[in-house]
Amino acid sequence: MALVEDYKGVIKRYKRYLPVSRKTPVVTLQEGNTPLVYSPKISGRLGKNCRVYLKYEGLNPTGSFKDRGMTLAISKAAENKAKAVICASTGNTSASAAAYSHRANLKCIVLIPEGAIALGKLAQALIHKALVIAIRGNFDDALRLVREISLNYPVEVVNSINPYRIEGQKTASFEVCDSLKKPPDFHSLPVGNAGNITAYWKGYKEYFSYKKIYSLPCMLGFQAKGASPIVKGRPVEKPKTLATAIRIGNPASWEKAVEAKHESGGLIESVTDAQILSAYKFLACEGVFVEPASAASVAGLFKLAKEGFFEKKKSKEIIIVCTLTGHGLKDPQIAVKSIKPPLIVDADLRKILKIAKI
Ligand SMILES: *Cc1c(COP(=O)(O)O)cnc(C)c1O
Image: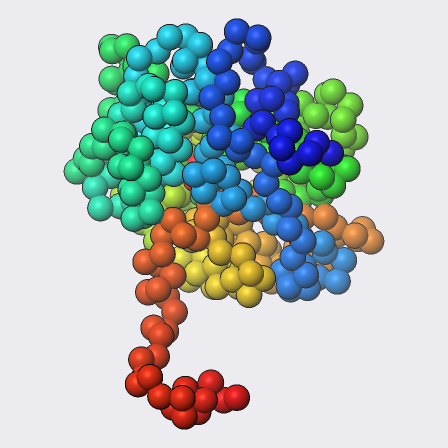
């Protein structure tokens, strides 16, 4: 294991698996190398033979897994002498694009659905001086516009339709295998635009072909019920869910996600907002604070467990990795809204002791 001071981000660590050369000017904030936290409470709820590990991607520099792909997308944009980058975003892509492009002195243009991104993410895009344009429309409208602009104007798209994003993001599965010294049996994650499930599956398959691992996990993807085009098999015109990061009705990597499901013998299902919020609070009991979209991966596991999914597996031990995509501080308003507000009392010792029951 490298010393902490030696760690220079995912490109440096995994360069032999990435499309970079000595000429690539690496733009990094030392993303990646996120903890894989064992969760006794979630394991216990799934079954006696289950061991659940949380890949806590909220601890990336801008607070989401998007940084893994962005370090590569922005480094390659700089290598190709791009002047500007553009993205459509439900929030985290813009936060990450803004930070990395500001660092690289690239102009960054961001299209977001008006009123539909979490406050923390908007703050990030603004403080890093991206040109933020809120459109009257949803994410899918924003991505359509970005595609159109990129066809006719000299700007690089840094959405996950940019293959470098997927390449960077696949490093998360390398880390999981390196930490566990083997692949998990199941890998659960939320699905929005479907870039991440595509990237994880690509990473696992590559590690397998390089003989770094000798089996492959089964991929479990979860969409929010009101934004579940892949589950329904058709685009959703007006996607609805409180998990804004996965409020997407026509995912760009749709086919790749379905491929990951089929090839891995996995599934893509949906979970309700109520199930997402309940998993969100359950994760908090483990000391882990995530944004609602991230909790979809755990909500999905709870749903499967209730259907006896893991009991049917006869193996002695089932290793499950669950990607927690973004940090809870991104969307503090949801946390405050979903929990009782703090008590307000006089600055009086007796009253406080009485309330605290000590
Ligand atoms: C982007 C994002 C997702 C969805 O990932 P896709 O690659 O679009 O499927 C889920 N959760 C969070 C926090 C995100 O930022």
